[in-house]
Image 1 (spheres, rainbow, N blue to C red):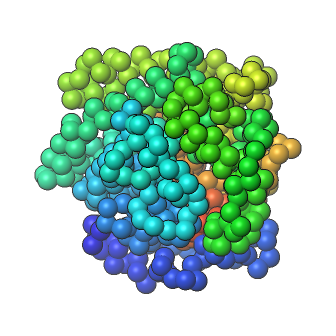
Image 2 (image 1 turned 90 degrees about the horizontal axis):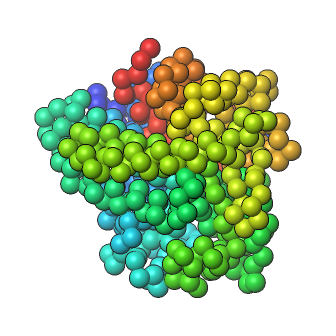
Length: 485
């Protein structure tokens, strides 16, 4: 059994949830009438929901890693693995440790954690042969990976695993504490790399060279950056594998977008994934304010872990890094909208699109007045309080935006994993009431037992991949970790 489960969780789930390996997986399906509200799910108890979530993770488990989703995403994604470990820690500390060790085994010699670790041959595109990271001097010899990164949420996962081990005591505590001590320098190298390679001018803003690095691939945040990308080659394959599993193409990035995505990979490969050369030569170069906030809070959390390990010098370094990124995030806040802004580093232009990335200060803090304003915005009519929302949860793009698309990936749908991250940040700021409201609304949304990648905000329809691992993981954390009432 890959996932040890309390009170027979995995066994209880089996009759409730269909096997994630079935060829007729809902991941392939499209609704009978796109845009219509789904049929209301029968009530499900918290114990039943947790059981189903554990069952999803068990079904996606290869033993060494948990795939991001059973068919659409058959490998390990970096920030997915962090959220998966957070959920696993509630039911099996050893399995959570294994997940993070698998990611660390693919760490580049520079300290970078790659955004994909490929586990085996599959028809996922672009796969390891397209990335061809062997051309990079710093690539790992023992793992096949992509050549870019994702948001550094990993310190939060390390903290969660450590706390879970200590709550359980005994062998779990010993394992969690040993793992944290043994791997601390690897995590430290990751955050140092972010500060050195992706903020070379120490502005406190993380640079990215592909929208995939943000985790929010086709968000309106990146429209200006992608306008700079003019592919000299058409690298799009004859058939897009993702559209075999998500038949409604409106839920995914367009062919034109994918051509640009693949061209950027090609440009990076031409310079052997060298950071300075990518900065100078890759068409897409953006300052990502949300990733900067994640770097700030991740550095702060890892500094707290360092304190407990007696690593005072490293903790001080991490706090300095956190302070730098926090200042950078706050420097981007629009006095008009109150939202943080990304910046196109090729043109110098600010990006004013109202997306969930604008709540970066809510994640990292640093200015009480800014945070209070963002709390009001989040609860207000442009976001969680929008009158058309089926569930009072933040959409990825404000419904008031002209670029809002309620079914299209990061251009409108609600993402359960972002609900979790917002909820976590609210609790860290002491905003327990709003955090509790978001948690309860999110669990109501997820009681459909689809564990979807994202949801249509007006109808509540599950979209994208079904049986998504990080969606199941955050359910387990919400239901099985002690939360204040």
